[in-house]
Length: 132
Image 1 (tube, rainbow, N blue to C red):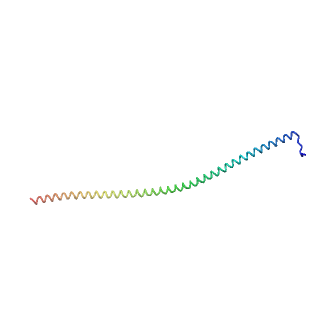
Image 2 (cartoon, rainbow, N blue to C red):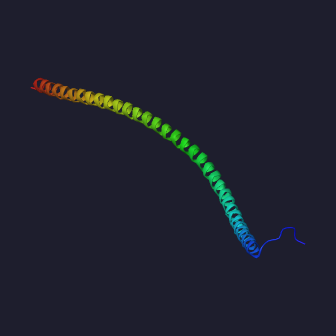
Image 3 (cartoon, rainbow, N blue to C red):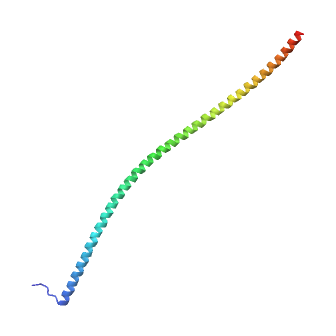
């Protein structure tokens, strides 16, 4: 025999409360299942993003190393360019000096040829006087 005796109105109210409680419990279970699924998806997504992040980090490290290499190459090329520029200027100065020397020797040669012509003219004139 039941320990508590309920009136029909109380029994009806009790049954409604139990039904409501079971409905709420069912909804809570459904919500928990839904949240578990969401958590599972979020964990898989997180794992995927971690892999992506690891890949990006590795790529970043490689790109930094490549950038450093390129900067070193750029520096070396600038130094080579500066050296080549200096060598070119030296060669241009040497060329100018050689050109000036050449001009001086050409002028000297021209003056010697003029003097040779003058001497030949005098010599020819002297020979002509002697022959007369």
